[in-house]
Image (cartoon, rainbow, N blue to C red; front, top):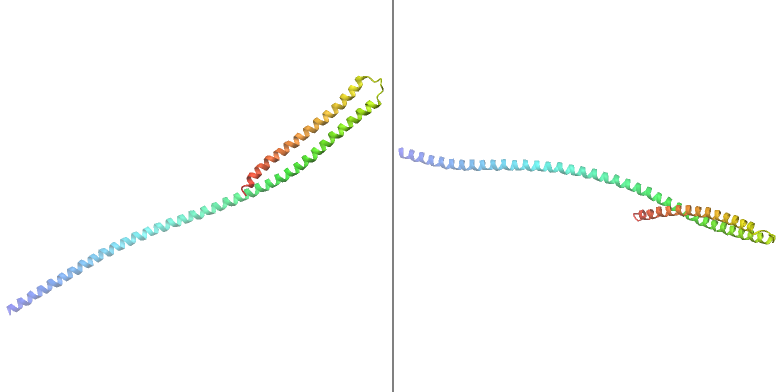
Amino acid sequence: MGGTLNDALARLHKKHAEVQAVVNDMHSMLKLEVEEGQQRKLQMTMQQQQFERQKRKWAEEAEDLRRSIATSATVARENDAQLNISRMRIDAAQQEKAVLQETLREREQFISSVLSDKENTFKFKVQEFVKYQAPDTDEASQRKFSVDQMEQIRMASKYLDSYAADVSKAINECNSVHIVGNNISDLR
């Protein structure tokens, strides 16, 4: 029995060693799996943190973009309002220009008619003076009458020239507004 007991003990040791080897292998595999699990958990935690950071960054960028869009919309509305005001001013200036041009045309006609009337009146007065002057009237009084008439015509002409210059200046100012208006109209 001694041999059998030793054999049984040897088999038991052998089985124990095999079981121990299997347990050690399982322990090593479990330890490796635990380490891999911890590694995956660490990676997932890091990915989650990265995702959270990215999510916050996207939220900040989205908020910045919303603010930028709101600011741009406000600026666009203000620019539209300014453009509308400029258009109204241009339209008013163009209407004023048309009125001033019509006024200038009427005044030029008036000036021409006044000058023509003055010239006709002067010619008539000179003819009347010559016609009704006594032959013995001295030449000095004729000259004085002619000089007086010429002075009246000169003064009327000077007044009308000054008036025409003022009207022309106003028209030129309107034309400069019209040129600016055309440049702004190009923006429409």
